[in-house]
Length: 106
Length: 117
Image (tube, rainbow over all chains, first blue to last red; front, side, top):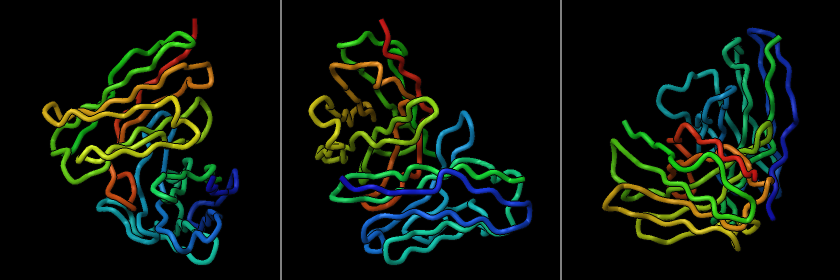
């Protein structure tokens, strides 16, 4: 089965840039989405089709996807960005989620 | 504004069937894919299945033998049945909407289902 691997944790200082990777076989050939999930809340779609932001998502969130790796970048990270982040792609008509990354804003 | 709301028992006995319903309001069920996704306590997200408004379905291969998803367009609802449950099926279950190949843009609030005798 298809797998998406993320680093378990990423730490970032306020105002700095956080980078979260998502690795999968030939992932660059698939569209990747990213979700933010805060404790006790449902996930929120923050990036779809590799690099598009839904309405209402701040511009500091951006995405890219090439080769075997998709990347979520949070520029000018704020304390409110502390959360779990999940990548997701479709493989053979099944949705696959990444292992998740906990972002800590120190 | 589209809203999704899960409903169903919060406690299911081992070996029995977990049944949940998602009610969609504020929008039509047409032209979208409707999924169930779960998250065991403290763990990551796992997609279970989707149903298209036309009735076509697809399942996570790891759960396919135990899962049925169905749709009632007249009630703007879709449902999940997961049989032969064990403690490993204890999770928050979410319903969510997507377009094919795109992301899940609307989610329910989630409902915790505990499998225990």
